[in-house]
Length: 405
Ligand code: FEO
Figure 1 (cartoon, rainbow, N blue to C red):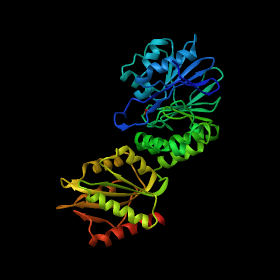
Figure 2: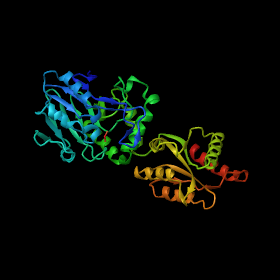
Figure 3: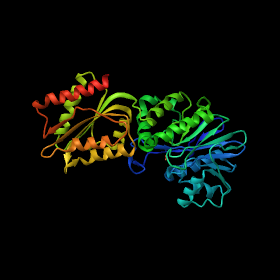
Figure 4: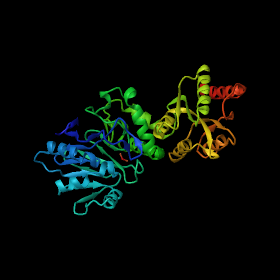
């Protein structure tokens, strides 16, 4: 049975939801699912913008069959070739063998690399600034390299103001009957999924996202964008400034909020207890926007997501094999991989017979750009005791002074 939604006149969402995949890209948990969005324009020509993951290909076909009826599919525009969007291309070609494919040179290269038989089709290679008319709708193409693969582009329909934004403005979580961001309380119900998607999937490519936002502003004018149609998550038709502002923060690594994220690594509960004491002391000093996470039981994608949200980070880790506790080390490596910047960090090391984690974590943070490390540090020897209170008070004072200034 088809399941489609109307985006605007003659434009339809023909994607599908996925509740079965546990790990997006086989790495990031998606307990609330994900949607793979594709869009069909019914103009003088019929045009499909992107396809879907292989797991939901059948739903895409039912949706297209329903809307197309006796009409053929004339064009397939591929904005992004990652398989969660490009995997169903060959099924499209089998069903509509005369479809013409519009995409970038790099995307055609990737289609061949993935083994798709595209060279029997008419391939229309486009580059930034090219335009194409499908009848009453004219689109222009904007290169979006590294948002989030090198071949990516976005497509702007100058007739109705729809920006097919590829991975940009995407989100985890399935749509489940809704389509538009204004059909639910996005800021309360959805923003955490959007942030976790952006920061973990596109987070490394902040400068490229900034470049795309600037190009969108200069080439089409932000005021001319009436709909944002990403490849995952809801479509935006109202209050586009809200999500553009979030993207501007994330892409420039500016924190959204003043607050403290405490991440601890603890083997027997002693470092955890010290982190709890620090959290209580921060609250007593008026720092209430805090989050406390056990790095061993929290998937790193959630830690990365909150790291892009809050201004301050406390790292508290036990020493393990004379190094940093492995899950904490993994968190630090993920920060580095995503090029995290512009955070203020406090360090709490711990250990029983050779506590080196504090110095090692400091080295890792120092290797990141534009980070501030507070001078006050402390090392917990086996467990926090009353005679350490002045040290942890000094640490709490320094963090509070930095947050509340
Ligand atoms: Fe949802 Fe980069 O693919």
